[in-house]
Structure formats: structure tokens, C-alpha cells
Length: 418
Image (tube, rainbow, N blue to C red; front, side, top):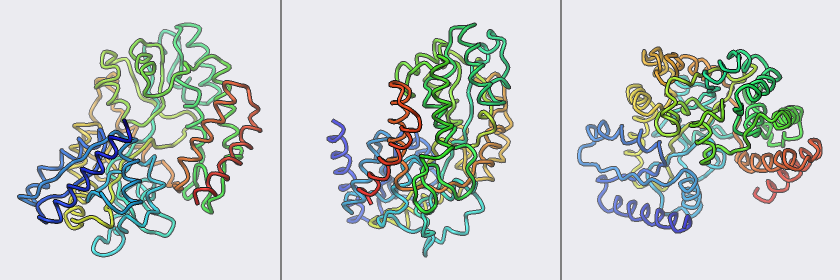
């Protein structure tokens, strides 16, 4: 079924591109995914005022299917839209693509815009050759969302969760004993944070700047140890993010925290657990860890039939302060422009979070995140590491052996794909 949907989308993109070529500049096509497509549609009235009579055809697929379809289209050099949405989690395999325009070159000359963004968000769209392959339009600074009512019942404070990882684990034991709730959805979540802790500008999560695997390092060992401690303490519900069980755990108060991008607050409010309004709070990540979850980008394919129009729309999405603030107010899409992060909206209390002005906390996080290097094989390494940690958690595989096997598998698969 997914393959069929991807084929249908590629056919639609191909027809849209062909139609645009016959009647330029009457139509441009943008490929996106939920909920980023909603932010795009907010910008269309302003784009229409700039370009009366130009139609914008928005083709939306699910998050995963969209990126698979764009990978296929770029490899084939056909059925391409004029503007492509990209999520940071998939960006590594796109920034080296010869099928995307280098926005540092004329007529774009986007390099002069770098200072308007947090360094980590800007750096993500730039490859090792210094080519600008995508511009960011929103970001996801990390936060620890927690149920204030459950912590209060357990006699715990926010600092019990944030001061140290050992304190976090101990707080989970107390919470479980006194309320029956699990502290986290899955032990993998702790690993995801810990492997990103302590990185400096220019370093990578899974690979160093020379492309060498880092999965057999002290950073990964500590992350695996932490996840195993959480499992042994019985504080994780053993449910995966975005599953029905995960959402239901939040609705029933069976899961007390979730570390994720700040945009999770909007999802909790709108569709995951709206009936829990006022019970949640937002806190910094444990031990001052600084990390981002996702972030949205747009890129222009080399084979776009409407590059000038695509560039104008991209500038509206990425460089227009008012547009980013509007998306933030309407959709909780945290703005990536530094000027938009100074809007008064950030100081307003959030009713869903008990009246906290949590957006200021998220802005502080956004300005501490290191400008790490994204590698085109990050997704491969992430899958391998996740599988090996499952072996540790489920089958008691030794951590040292799991990391050694992870490194060997990553290096073998990277060579195969190189």
C-alpha cells in the first residue's frame, strides 16, 4: 500500500511539474508532510499577493513516505517538485545530493543569511563542501515534559528530574512506588538524549568529522548503561513513541514524562491528551543536556521548472519573521529565525502547561544547542544502535559486545552504501 501511495505521489508530482513547464509561471509544486504543510499553507496568501495568478500545488505524504518518495525522485532526476520539505532526521542523506541546488551560489547567495539563525540549525543544511543545500524554517529545541500532579503525589520536585541522571532514575523508582506510574515511555529515550550530551560544535552524534564511527565510545557506553538502569529499575513502560499505547499512557496518567522537541506540547494539547490541560509542565533536560528533536527545512531541486518562484516562496518561509511568528502562534512551530524568537509571544503564559511561560525556556535551549555535523549515514547508525540496545534490554547482551557489534555493523553497511 505504501509503495502504491509513493508511486501515485510521484506520478502526481511528474504531472504537476510537466504542467508547470507548459504554462510557466502559472504553477509551482511543493512536496511536504504533516503538519509542516499547514505552516506552508499559512504562507500562501502572502505568496499570492507577490505573485497574482500563480498557483501553488501542495503534495502531502506521510512523514516517512514523503522522504522515501523524494529520495526516489532525486535518484531518478524525474517527477520532482519545485520545492522539497525535509526533516532534520532525514537531512543527512539529502545535503550531499547533487540533485539539490547549492543555495550559496547565484542567484540565491544565501550564505549571508547565516547569522540570522542558531548555528546548529543553519549548519544542518550545509554539507562538508560548504554547499548550502537547504534552509531551516522551524526547529525543535528539547524539553522534558512532565506531569506536575503525579510528581506532587509522589512528593517529588522538578529538580529531582533535572539535576542528575542518577537522581532521575531514583525519582522514577519513587514515582512508581507511590503512584504506580512509569517515569518514561521507553528506556531507549534516555539513550537518545545521552548520546547527544556533551557534544561540541563540529562534532557528530554517530560519526566524527572524518566520517569515522563513534558508536564504540564512552558516550555511547554511558547511554547504554543509563537505559539499562532505567529498565532494571522498572521505570519505563516499554512502549514506543507514537504508538497507541504511548498516547493512551499520557491520557491515563500512566506515563509521567517525555523528553522530546518543544512541539510535543502542541501535540499533547491538540490531539494526544487534551483532557490533561493544566497538568503538564516543561523543564530543561537532565544535567543540562542540549539537543534538538527534528527541525524543518526546504530545498530546491536542480530539475525544478520554477526555480525563481520556488526561491521566492522559500525566502518567505525561511527568512520572513512575521511568517514564522504566525506559524508559531497557529501551529506551535518554534521559529528558527533569531529575530522571531524575540517576539513577545514567547513571554505569554501557556494554559496547557499550568500558566508557565515555557517558550522562554525553549528559546534558551535553542541558543545552547551545539552546531553538530550531520552525516548521510546517521539514519543507518541510529537504526543499528537502536537494535543493539534492544538486545541489551531484552536479552541481556553485554554492553561492550553490543557496542562492538554495532560499530562493526555500521562500518559494514556504510561501506556497502558508500
